[in-house]
Every structure is written in C-alpha cells, then in structure tokens.
Length: 374
Image 1: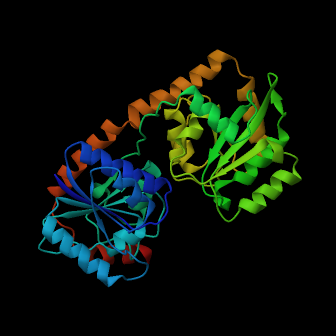
Image 2: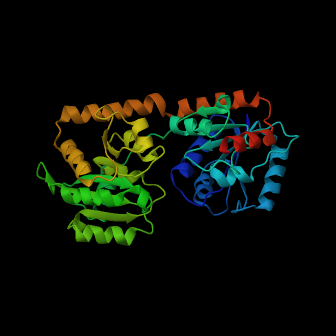
Image 3: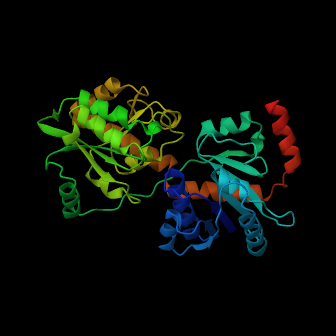
C-alpha cells in the first residue's frame, strides 16, 4: 500500500519517536511509504539510518502556503491510499487534492485543539481510549474514530562492560539502586515531585544506596538542580542531559518512575515494561489507562511526594516474588497490546477500511463542529 506520513515537529518527544518507529515498521512490513518531515529535525536524522524514503518541507507555523502546495503536489504524484498526519501543524497544512483517491487520517496523542486543525480529515486515530472519547465528544463522527495504541521495540542487548562504563560515567556507586526518569524538564513532567520524594525516602535499601538518574533537559534544569541541593539529595541525583537514544539508561536502571502531572499515554511506561522494569507512575489519564495498580505497576496521586516516596520505598522492600509478578505483568501487557506486529497489523487494517470509505465533506464537518461549539 502507498502511504505518506507527515510530521512537522522539531522535537524528539514521544509522538516523534513513535512516528519514526511506525514509519520504519510499515516500511519493513512491505508498504511503500514516504516520510515527510522538516530538514535537520531529529526524526529526519533518525530515518536517515533506515531505507525509508523522505521528503523534506519547511512545515512552518501558521499558514505555510509553500508547504501546503508542495504537499499537494507530492500527494498527486505518489497517489497514496492514505496520508497520515501527526499533531496539529502537519494536520492543518495537509490538504488532500479533491481529485486524489487518498484518505487523510490524523493520529492524535493528546487532547489537542481540534477546530481549524483536524475537522477536514477523513478519519482520526487516538492512541488512548480517552483521546477517542474526546474526539467524539467534540463532534467527530464516532464511526470514523479509531483506537490504536503505541508500540515500543524490544530492548537491545548491552554487554556488562557497556553498563559498567555508563555507571562510571554517571559516577554511580557500583552497588547503587537506580531509579530512572526521563523527559523534558518542564513543569508537567513532575520531576520536582520526584526529587522531593527521593528526599523523603531512606538513603539506602537493603544496604544499597538509592540514586536517581534524570535523563533529559529543559528550562527547569537549574531550578531542579537547586531543589536537589536544597533538599540534600544533590549527591544522589545524576543529570546526563538529553539523549535521543536513552535505551542504555534503561539497561542500568532498577525502577522506572513516571511522576508527571499529566500524560495522555506515557510512552516511557511502555519503554519501562519492555526493559523488564517495575513501573511507579502518578495517576495521569494515560497511566491509569495502562496500569492496574499492584497488577502491572504502582500508581500514586499526582503531585504527592510523600505518597510517591512511600510506594517506591515499598517496592524496594518487596520480596523477589512480588517484584517478579509486577515485572512479568508489565511484560505481558507489552506482548498483548503494544507489540510492533500487532500495532502494524491494526494500522494496515485501518488503512484498508478507511481507503474504502467515501471522502468527507469538509464544509459539513466544520458546520457540525460549529453547531456543537455553540
């Protein structure tokens, strides 16, 4: 099947990484796919290492008429069955020519603003049931809203020497228990809550020191480091910076912590499970959809350092059987619902279904949304 996938981001967050994974997986499954993205972006660099065909466009903010016209020409030339877009910018700028047989699918990983961005599409994919419910509440026809989750790839093998080298680079004690958290250093990620939780915990568990590795960067780096100093945990928090490929850090971790104030899904939870790590997460919409408390993970209230400290400490004190049950349940969740083959098969079935649907009338769709908003 001929496909075009469009993403306009210059970041390399969860949605961007999933774009790379899905595009590459569809390519490997035998689809002819063209990945449209911005020159010099992290996703473009990541796809340079694959055999995926790429088409670079500015995809600028506001109305980038050059990109709109060049996208239309690309669609007319490639004659794809489906054009799939990610997030608001790419979706707004993608306008399928009337003469094209292509159908436009928007993939959403958040509760984004819809009016002016998404109502002209033929179908929508939400990566959580909550996103799908939101789309229907906001006026998108339920028969054209589909739920397909994300997937993560299996972990790479790392030699003991590689893991030891990374621990030495981070100045981690040889016997340290490593708590791992990843993301941009912005308020919604809740890393301040995690630092306060670390300060409220005992410094050791079973005679081993407890350390935190925070992989990421952002405007709150200095305030977070100051907080670590004020709470007396600066010597036990490690700051390796942003890494487009954070997988080596999973290889040295013992526990994954997701302390966010809000997550629509939480790809990092899937990553933790795929690396056979127990996961402790706050009760964000995404985490609550993925995690059954004390089943495949542990859940705590949002923004509650004491509760987070208590659950992490309880996990560290748990016996081997309890630890293994938690890890095995997370692994089973990945195999059942978030494995690459299952998600690629779901997208392939969706493309075939949507390609057989009639095109939607954009003016009617806009009127429906306007009447609902009123």
